[in-house]
Image (cartoon, helix red, strand yellow):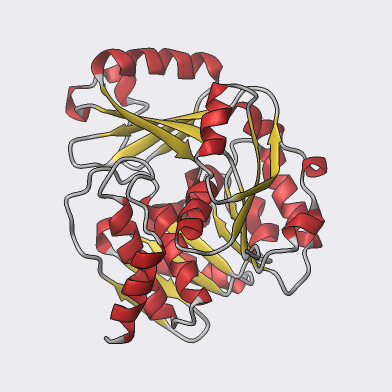
Length: 328
């Protein structure tokens, strides 16, 4: 199978806990906020993990990382995918690798201690993430083979904790053949760096997947004005994920909002990543931008019905949903 999409971003072992946020002690409440993403050093991560193990209920574990979630979802929907990233020579690394089943692994580097992510859920499935990056922060430009990346039609970048890896991604973007499209999900970690830090990378992006909060954090403007500012830098289409409010999309030819069906979510972790997978799958199947957004919503909803990647959409789901959208 040809490789159509290659992801490049952090690889983590997601460990999922559920606990009642209103009952948190003040010290822990400073770390756990709805929808937040926070990087912790080794000592902080070990300390917080110990507290959560005592007061929370372990739900399960899963391979994780924004771009990794997106390419896994795309692969399950029948689109050829590969990945570039670093995982540890440890049990967590073996688990992360196994979670990339169906994804081409020639771009993986194994060394050091794997990245870990605590995904904390409340009773409604809302989550926050606490990240210990491990060897993700050691990925260098020398680890990335440009000829491997240039097999793809689209590269999908997501965030790292360290500035060094952002620079690696920026340098790669500058070297890419112009025929290869680039998509980016900056997450909160990159959005907090501000527009100046991301401007060069954004100028090479075709697609930007970003939440409304991240867009405002990145630009200092409300999400619609922020999207227009981002588009002025060269981004073709801004896809703003607004959670239960649906999505706002700004493309060269159109601007619209689409609501999303409300469901009782089991786990919202990675739903935005699967939304991006659905949107990209729609593009590859010739759908217009509005139907791509609808497909993104439907794939994201499917992913939230179980913990981790257990309920990710497959090829049968994709084809059935595309048929339904074609009849609308």
